[in-house]
Length: 311
Ligand code: NAP
Image (cartoon, rainbow, N blue to C red; front, top):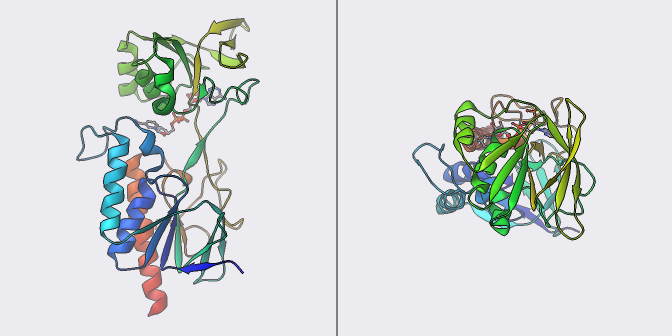
């Protein structure tokens, strides 16, 4: 028989959305737990600089994550470390998060903020050379490629911002995009085009990552001309989007055509009592501010639901 731990609100995932939900749940005097596989903070813990969170012109992601964690803990949020492998709804009033440890975390309501995982290129050599030059995290791995030629794949905000960050390390950074126009916001593009260490290869895709024990080059194909070329590089950073982490959710929860969870205005999913917030949910933009707003709504909706059920 699995060990059961009882709470009012169980929050799965410890990014800004989860931490905010934790703050509001605990502040409403409900027994609230947040379960996180790694460190609290989620993606922001690996973000070098945040400059679009109101009230902070510049703050490191790690510091913001620490401030959010301390703040939620002051109101009584309990933070536990476990990997949740399954979420079930055992009726209206019992939501269960099953931990890899064997513990079942039972709540009257649940808030899921499990974010997303990077989209892979899915080309030969990518998997084999991950951690050996192929990376999905500039702040984690950039410093390994000091004074080397670094490549970045993608044309969205993440690719362009991370490419600029990587210019601190590389002798030069080459951004490879499959079209001749970036998707990134204009303000970010303008900064990128001014950066003298950043070069662009347009209309091109990576067909193979080459190297024996580490990345040595990329095989590129120009999608307009069909021309194939080899680009020597020590690193290939991939920022081509994210997949929402929905695999642990009950199958009854409705997703949109892109695989993101759909919710009502309360952040409630199609399974009553299970709420979601942040990058797992369909969003126009995926920002810290969105996740924080979602976390507030989800936690307060959970609080109101529990109060109504106990009246
Ligand atoms: P994104 O906006 O979806 O951009 C993905 C990029 O990768 C696109 O340029 C896309 O090309 C390219 N791409 C997709 N699949 C590819 C493939 N198989 N091969 C080559 N290229 C491929 O994703 P994101 O940059 O991760 O951003 C996600 C969200 O987070 C966005 O809403 C973004 O605004 C937000 N974000 C904001 C900030 C910020 O405001 N500071 C920072 C990071 C992220 P196409 O353009 O041709 O489709």
